[in-house]
Length: 317
Ligand SMILES: [Zn+2]
Image (cartoon, rainbow, N blue to C red; front, side, top):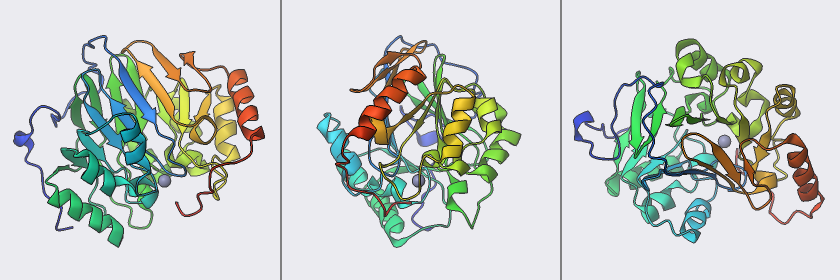
C-alpha cells in the first residue's frame, strides 16, 4: 500500500509515545475521569475514548458515512487526537473518512493488511492528503499515551489473507486499575496467537468488548478464563441479519456470571472510571460497577417489547 507512510518513531510529540513497555506498569492516575462511549452506530463498531486531560481517540467509525461524526458532533466534539481502524471491513471504517475530514485527527492507527476495497483505499488517500501521521502495529507492543491513559497496541499476528477479521488491531486500554480490551473482530486464530504469545496483554481486564459483535467466533471459554471481565459489551444493530449476539456467546457469558451490555438494547454505552472504580451511565441503566443480571434482563425485556424504530442494518458485515 503505497500511500502508507512510515511514522518516524522519534518524531512524535505529546499524544503518542510509541514505546515498548510492560503493560503491567499502570501510570499514577490523576483522579480525573476517563470516559469511554461504545457508540450506538447500528451493526458495526465505534468506540470513543476521552482521557481526564481531554485527549481523545476513536476506535472505528461504524458502518455509515456520517453516523459516528454526527454522534460526536452532537456532543460538542470538534476534533480528536487519534483515529483507529481496527480492520479493513466497512462496518468499522464506513464513517472514518468523514471523521478524518471533519474531526481533524492527528494520528491514524491501522494495519497494512492487503484486504483493501476501493472505499478503504479512498480513506487512506484522505488520511494522506489531510496529513495525518500513520501508526502501524508491528512485532512489538506499542504504548500510546492518551494523557494519563495508556493504549497498549498488541504486536500484530501474521497476516491472514483469507479472513480480515484475524488482522484486527488489538488494544488494551489501561487507566490506573481500570482496563478494557478492544480487539476488533478477531476470531480464534488471532486470539489464540495473542493468548499464546502475549497473555500479559489479555489477562484480568475490567471490561471486555466482545470481538465480532457477539458472534460465536468472537469469544470462547479460554478467552473468558484469561480476561475474567466484570462486564462484556457488544456493539451491534437491532434485528441484524447475522443473529448477533449468537446464543452460544450469551450462554458462555451467563455461565461465567459476566453481564453483557448490548448497544442494540441499551443504545450508546457510557463507562466512566477514576482509575479505581468504574460506573455505567446509560439512560436505561446506571450502575456503580457491574450491573445485576436481573436489571439487564428487565431492561432488555422492556426494550424488546417496544416496536422496532431503527432500520435493519443488513449491509454491514
Ligand atoms: Zn465488524
